[in-house]
Amino acid sequence: MAEQTRKVLFSKERIAAEINRLAKEISNDYGNQEIMLVGVLKGSFLFVADLIREIKSPAVIDFVRLASYGAGTKTSGKVELRKDLEMSIKDRHVIIVEDIIDSGYTLQFLYKELLQRQPKSLKICTLIDKSIRREVDIKADYIGISMEDGFIIGYGLDHNEKYRDLPDIYLIEE
Image (cartoon, rainbow, N blue to C red; front, side, top):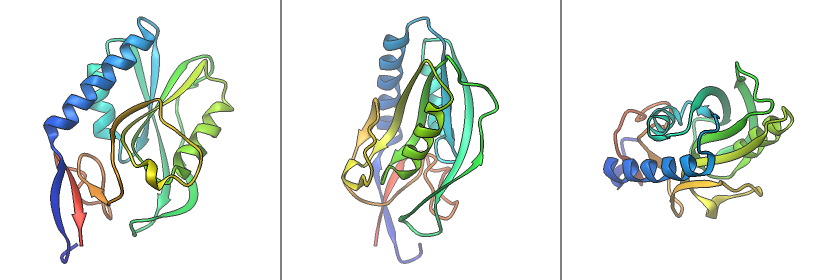
């Protein structure tokens, strides 16, 4: 990334405001019903942590780890489950929490997999939605920020496992 520059695209304040809005929407939709957040590792870990603290409904968390990106900035289209859930989702209200939806392959794979496990309901929450890049038919129920194209890092989003720790989200410019 030496030849690339980065500029703040979404500030930590904007991210916090979007998370607060999403948490209110989720809390209003579920009220006192317990929900289960399924965080998609590694990218969503900061988002899930901040989101669950703002949600007023009773909530539990579990995580999956999927892989579809190699060392590059484009998806391979192949999805691999590397860590499965530890809790059952049968008859539970489940919300998949994703850091970013790009091509949609990873999320489509996970959605179909979880649907087979008979949750009471299954919804999707994403911090970043890049619908212009969608290659499969999948949509989020809760969307933090919609953006056009571009490769981003920070706030859990990485490039070769680096930059997840940045508090803001940066656009990489070549």
